[in-house]
Length: 48
Length: 158
Image (cartoon, rainbow over all chains, first blue to last red; front, side):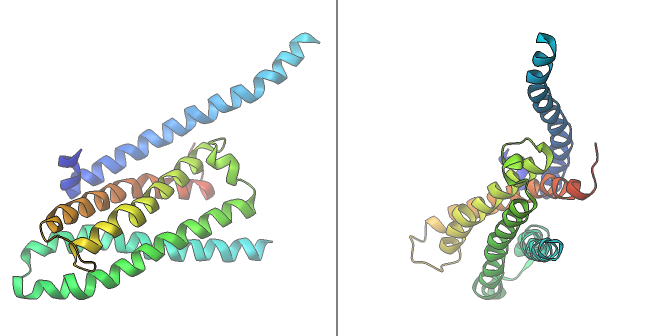
């Protein structure tokens, strides 16, 4: 990690890679949060 | 309410430009230029420019976080973001908080020793200068996803 941070171009590349990971990671987290929130509703529907 | 949010967002953006602008000045201009500056001219950077830049840098960081949290609170999504129920802006907020922590509790204390603003063992100065540089670079790296996240609030990408 130190080697990457010593180089400004590598630091920028790492930042761009982190951005891509963050965008897709946030999508996964958002979808999993929605699944958790929807579960009680679907359980209630099933018991009707 | 709209005017209040507009004002808080404006102050958040102005503080953010101050903070990230100086962060990028350090990393894109000052640090790469230091080896090219003659030794007799280096005190101009170390004794005058860097301390002044660090003042606006750390208070820019403070007020960016202050107005950012105020904006999220008054907009009603502060807790949802921090709990990652609003994942993308939440990750950006956590990145901003980590970066501000680095500024106040790692970079600034290390720079105070490296620049001789506080009394310390001279042998510590190179270690502290390297620590400040590495954490400054870490913040430069994190600033890219942090800014991408902030923009996503008004321009959703997914």
